[in-house]
Length: 404
Image 1 (cartoon, rainbow, N blue to C red):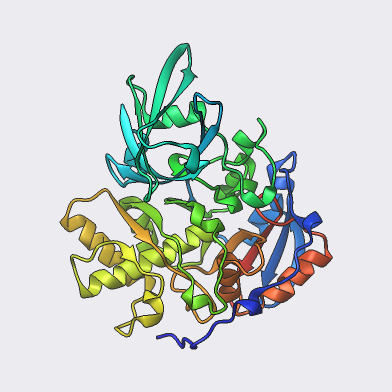
Image 2 (image 1 turned 90 degrees about the vertical axis):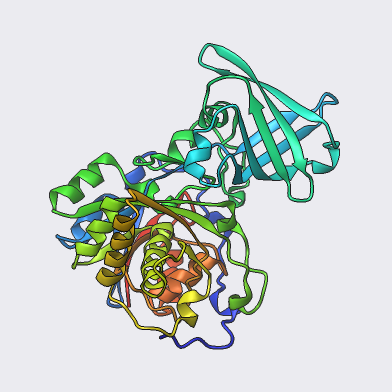
């Protein structure tokens, strides 16, 4: 199905990003960012509030409604040394992020631990936090030093999401190289965020306002939502010269029945809002393929499965309909899975026709995805954006790209 070369050179997806082109802070108005429009090899320059003019009526736009949690928690030892715990992956009482965020009394997570050497075995870290008028103590136990497993305990009826909202810091991308401010808490979050669990924002959505969403609806453009909880792996650099050897990170995807039903019946253009929505949609397609061959297949997409698959190709409607039949059989209202899908040039897109996305780091998994989607015309797009002084990365400007 795919022509996959032996080597995909990372050096082919590098470019020079001057420090001054990295947006360190958000604009005052979300939808006043600039918008680069690319279709049929032609580039034009707009503002984001003009986006509805470029989306065909009867299209579908798919948004990632994950909500960023303040995933960076700081504890202080009796000696005064600070231990920083960055929440990476839930381990208990469930591995499903939405469930763990609502858990009470105790949860365990795999964490990135700053100052780990100073956290002695058996030592319990304690912190006092305030939720409303109530003061409570949260305790952190180092359960497994090698696996960096931390158990958190608290003696109230508050859900874990309340705990992290009260005590955690906004996990800004490392390349911003600054401490979070009060402004980051609402701005490093989409206006439609709903399901807590991401440790990084789906930044393509940061430009949307209620006014832009209303204008899209008024034009007859259908909106659908799914959830991909963005993990810290999204910032993981590629350290190998042959991209295929990169250890792609895994992220959790949650999609409800109604959304899959809408996808299965839609026969017009589908526009993914952000690379996370795109990865989710393409992963859903491949889950349908897996189910077509094994009706009890679990929703877990390996990074190179699309390139290695040699079976019967399905239309996107067929793939989504197969998922619906599976959900009907087991009376499921939603499905939860994981994806490691790695999209790079030679990938053939099965679901997405358009992509709203920011401008990404050189030599990253995201620039590879953009390169695949634009049939390697990404360099001319990025050269134009740099020449026109667009703002790059999470708080930067936006683009609307159409599949080549």
